[in-house]
Length: 171
Image 1: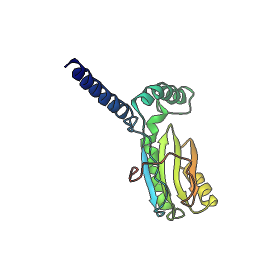
Image 2 (image 1 turned 90 degrees about the vertical axis):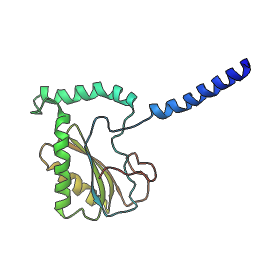
Image 3 (image 1 turned 90 degrees about the horizontal axis):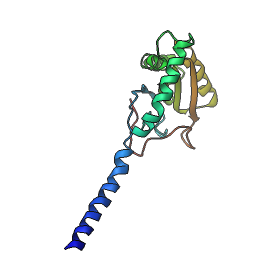
Image 4 (image 1 turned 30 degrees about the vertical axis):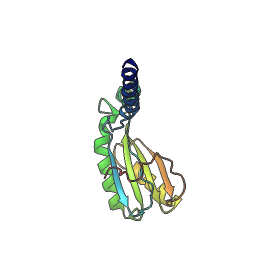
């Protein structure tokens, strides 16, 4: 009887241990970073996973975000008390600007905003088009910089993390 009890306890604990990594690895957009799809012309383009964090990553990132976000205001480069406060306004304007520009309709691109930086992810037709998109985004008011993670074509290894097969990025 005692052996059966220990065996069942071991199975229960083993089963729970199996679930703990799944729970601990639950990744979400905890910081609510704006992430939008701008264009969708290249169907085979690797889909970015977006701004997903585990709870552990959130704890590690929170201090850095508070420090970086507030230093912008303290140094006089931002009118708002935290540079992350701009992102929810910037990213929709970037999306509209790129969609109405006319040069980027044949791309598949997502934009992510963090600290007034715009991160471009996805696929373009040429290196020249990638650079033109980067320069265009810099013209949008309140954008402090652009991280160009665009890839030419749809094959190769993207410069960004990708969503799991069948996963979808933000619209």
